[in-house]
Image (tube, rainbow over all chains, first blue to last red; front, top):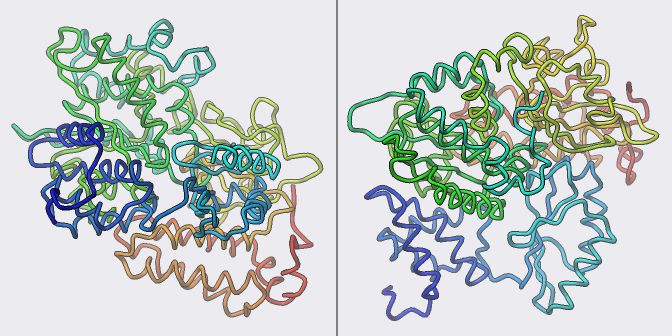
Amino acid sequence: MSTETTEIRFTPERLQKALDIIARYPEGKQKSALLPLLHLVQEQWGWVSTEAMDYVAELLSIQPIEVYEVATFYTMFHLEPVGKHVIEYCRTGPCCLMGGEKVYDHLKKRLGIETGETTPDGLFTLKEVECLAACGWGPVFQIREKYYMNLTPEKVDEIIDELSKQG
Amino acid sequence: MKILTQHINVPGIETFEVYRKHGGYTAVEKALKKMTPEEVVEEVKKSGVRGRGGAGFPMGMKWSFLAKPEGVPRYLVCNADESEPGTFKDHYLMKTIPHLLIEGMIVSSYALGANKSFIYVRGELMYVVRILEKAIEEARAAGFLGKNILGSGYDLELVVQPGGGAYICGEETALLESLEGKRGNPRNKPPFPAVKGLYQCPTVVNNVESISNTPWIVNNGGDAYAAIGVGRSTGTKLISASGHIKKPGVYEIELGVPVEEFIYSDEYCGGIRDGHRLKALVAGGSSVPILPANLITKTANGEARLMTYESLSDGGFQTGTMLGSGGFIVFDETACIVRNTLNFAHFYRHESCGQCSPCREGTGWMEKVLHRIEYGKGAMEHIDLLVDVSKKIEGNTICPLGDAAAWPVAAAIRHFRPEFEWHVKHPEEATRPGAVYPDPILM
């Protein structure tokens, strides 16, 4: 699949960023740019499609399978379209001890969806993840790069209200 | 004595300017202008500092293993993949005082002869990646990175590399695979990274906290570091405290503080949250054996247990545990040990890379059987089955994740078997929402 015929391509700014990333590795080791590039894909489209994986393969001059096998291994990459705000909440032990189960039950009820699902208005997707390395400030979830910590059902409502207002 | 967190609350310490004003980058000046790389390695060896990621392997010894073939680049890779449940001290250190790690990377790279070094940060902490990249640019602008640093003739570039969500990439060889743009499947060792690591070149992989200790060691000498602590547990350690305590958070302690003091003193965790009592402790991240109340503040011999590698390991896995990553998770009597063991079992099953049959299949089975017991469908034979499966994983895998999955299950049953039996014999009682074992041994 050539980059001329496909719709999938980085914005000029992001393409420059990708080229800068590729250039920082030793000669012949450009495949090291694969995970950073997949993050750029997700930054631009919100998820990682097969077409985007093919595009990244072209940029790195590697086989598509080399991208597929990586995109399917690492849990951060969403392989299906997601809502505007992907809420990734930590289900691991310490957060549960800090009250996590109650907070996440409230979160699910508030949004009316289960983990893996997206609200009908396309605003929120829920994803259950493992330890986010913020245990002492738990319960925790993250939305894109931002960590939301010391959660309570009330704080969850505030956050959802705020994000719903923004649309 | 605070080595890492001495200035951590100074406003603006995340900036180069404030960090420099408080003595930052003097170790770079000293190392590059007044010491040879070998002399820096010697100070780290003398310090006795042990790997702070969890394995506790002496850092100086690991550095001395680095092969030095002619014309082959060497690499220093910082393991900032912090994913061991209960551990959050590297996250804390990097986001609050990023220049400490940058300075540590410079002196350590100089010591090892690396001219391009990497900081591999778990992908979920992308905001920390940004903070580190900003700090690197500040350091470069001030002349501490790039070509011919401070006129010393030494060149260094630092690259911050994100992961993609995989606990296994905290294992050093899986980390290197990920850095090379591949799935995080651990490699067989030997060869060790010191001989064949990143791009098959000699590589040292060190934890964030380990590297962050090197500026102080350069400035004050390895002997001064070794004078702190007890026995072979020298220096200070960052403990990530969470769970049912009054004051969860990151604490820098001198190794040797009694466990009882760490849990109950207002200087640290402040005791168990109101109205509750200590039931269990996971002292070093989810992978280390859980301890019951009677073995937490005292060893099996009745001696006071200290926060050191040796004291926490007193009694082996029969009556002891490990300092590990220092992910200190405290449980009171409202915690169900079976439920928590299931929670951890799910974690390991999810994180297993799948290469080794004992781990791939064994983690799956442990989760399934624990699920049955927790939800009232277990049988007495299942408890011994769990121990049996854990023994069949242990030692039979390419990397320690298999062991890490097996140890919590074996330890929970070793010390809390009556709780598991209660779930089997009284399923209606045990599966009531919020139900906990009615007869726990508490402190």
